[in-house]
Length: 243
Image 1 (cartoon, helix red, strand yellow):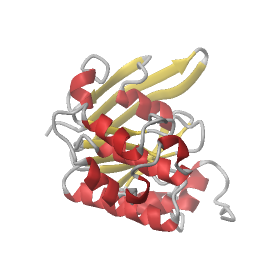
Image 2 (cartoon, rainbow, N blue to C red):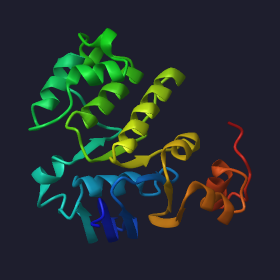
Image 3 (cartoon, helix red, strand yellow):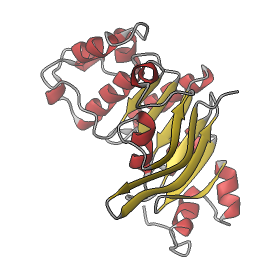
Image 4 (cartoon, rainbow, N blue to C red):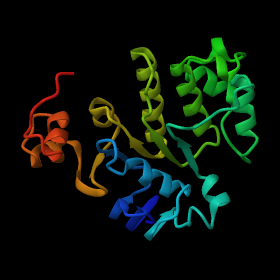
């Protein structure tokens, strides 16, 4: 079976700085992969290259066998993306933004259904510029899902959400997984990736430091939980954070 996402020998340099250094990543259809790493580890560069926002310096990226730059329109039809810097049209309301995004696709999800599923009904008539940070995040997730994608890339999915909102979004992602949608989740939340992902990839200085199931990562680092595993891989001697 053809991988949903295939990254081979991916390298991305900015002048003398190497953001990604020979990364290999294969995600099977219906899989859920969590991408972890400290700030500057290469996470955002990786997902932006998969999406087609950046060209590789070396290596290859394929999304369902398609080149995300050369085959941009075809990739967009199967790929939903929510990035940290995603911007909505500020002068349009929540409902207007989603109807606009829906118009970009031949098929997709009813905007009203996403408004209800993501708890945006009370602000459906509110302009995007007047939304709270958490509401903007929900709108960004809705825009990523409006085309009914078979692959979804989510960058810091629940940043700014309160506990209720976080669990609502998690339930939606779990429903997508049950429908066979492939998930790539960039996150700093160990609770989030352990709940939603069947495989983890931890980046360190542009390279994959470790990958495997959450249980594998904990066992191989001789840690008690994912947080401790993450800290050990960063060379902090296994000391736990106070949070």
